[in-house]
Amino acid sequence: MRLRLVRENTSIDFFSKARIWLGISMVAMVIAFASFLIQGLNYGIDFQGGTSIRTDSSVPVDVAEYRTVLEGLNLGDVSIAEVDDPLFDEDQHVALVRVQAQEGDERIATQTIEAIQSALQTIDPDMTFPSVESVGPKVSGELIQTAIIAVALAVVAILLYIWLRFEWQFAVGAVLALSHDVILTIGIFSELQIKFDLAIIAALLTIVGYSINDTVIVFDRVRENLRKYKKKDLKEVLNISINETLSRTLMTSVTTMLALLALFILGGDVIRGFVFAMMWGVLIGTYSSIFVASAILLVLGVKRDWSKKDPSAGTKYGHIDT
Image (cartoon, rainbow, N blue to C red; front, top):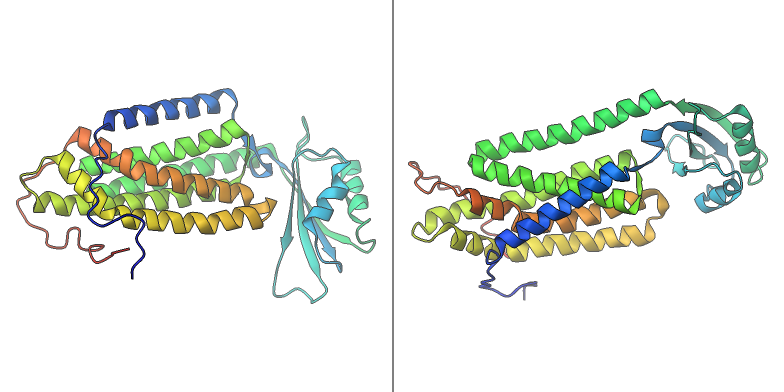
């Protein structure tokens, strides 16, 4: 007996209110963009600049204990992560403590570094500090620029791929859906003022990949059905295609969300921002592949008179029955 999240032969009309869904998405994007302009992002140390202190101790690293002893110093944003390496000795425990740049200074004062070291040595008097490094505003600015370029190049590469694989209308729908996902993800981080660092950029790139994978599967089925149902109008073909892939879409999204939920609850503070971005991205990506990418394709239209039949179109995922 196969598990199905939706019954066979579903016939949901996803496009009876297509323009309303597009309108809601546009309003949400405007709100997200306005929040970004007004509130900005709560940049982490990667983008804001700061100082990283490497610790070496014979006592196992307890992130919560490290954070507790540093709370009284009023350092602002502090990131603590344990460092694992197979080359470490059995009783060697290393952590990386990163402290945000203090207002008006490129690096924290020597007295502050000494206070941090003294506080950490209350956990282990023999703790050593092999390195202390600072990330200044210039480097942080370069990281922001590089992150923007990385996301933009990913979107452009996807535009070219979809354009070559399908038609330009499909490419426009896919890229606008991706832009929708990225803007809303940045917007939710701005609205909630969740720390935004390089891990979130990694999450954005992952969201782009996840979203385009779902969109391509729907579009592949759309192209197959455009050849199969030559007399049906585009709206009906789109509805048939989405209903045929709906079980697979929901199964992938639900199983991914369950894994992410476990990480969000049990993974700790270090990866919580990344996991939240992924959870939001899965939710928005699933929505956009149906209600944004396909709705834009419906608005733009697509040609139906291919001169050369492509027998492989839509067959890559045709055997999947979840």
